[in-house]
Image 1 (tube, rainbow, N blue to C red):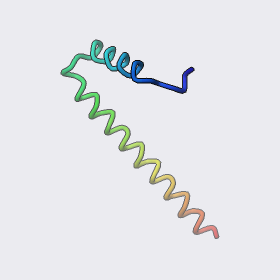
Image 2: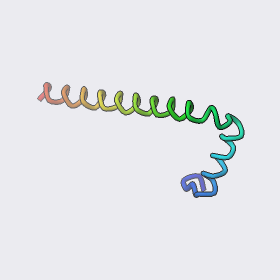
Image 3: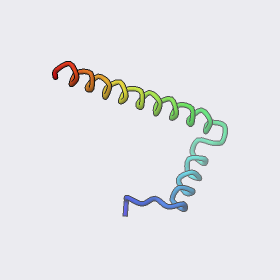
Image 4: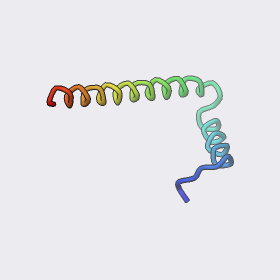
Length: 59
């Protein structure tokens, strides 16, 4: 089933990533992933704040 990912699948994926990119590239990939996630969270927060303000002004 696609919904459940276990420890063995995570280890397999981590091993494949390590083989493909190498240990020197992993910190850079982690930083860029973290930046992207942070920007996504910020954009969704700004969008929800904007929608809430719009709803308050229309009432």
